[in-house]
Amino acid sequence: MRIEWEGTDKLARKLLEKSEEDFISVNQKNTRDIYSRSQKQGGTPIDTTELRMSAQYRGDEVGYNKEYAPHVEYGHRMKQGGYVPGQYYLKRNVDTQRPIYKQDLKDKLKE
Image 1 (tube, helix red, strand yellow):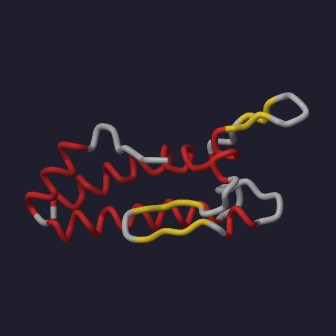
Image 2 (tube, helix red, strand yellow):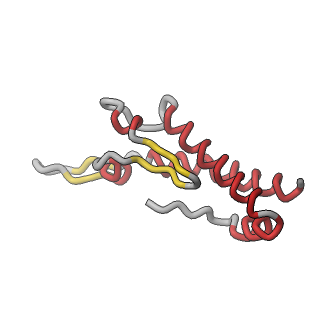
């Protein structure tokens, strides 16, 4: 899954022009926030806690390394028929972070 921060391109470009180091620090802070939220109650669906424990972040990337993570995120068909709808736990997390990221970019530009 790829995350696109819509509406922040212009801010990100301006911050990159000012300081690449500041831009990287804002990205890393927001990545940590997404990861931290994934580890809290309600951040990641729990059955056996394996999915939550598989969450990782490195640099500016967050993801889950369990092979069934996309099926839980997006939903899947069942062998005996029927469909299990997606829980969109990562999308919700990113949607929560989006306005925070935008504000962090603005704040860093004002420094």
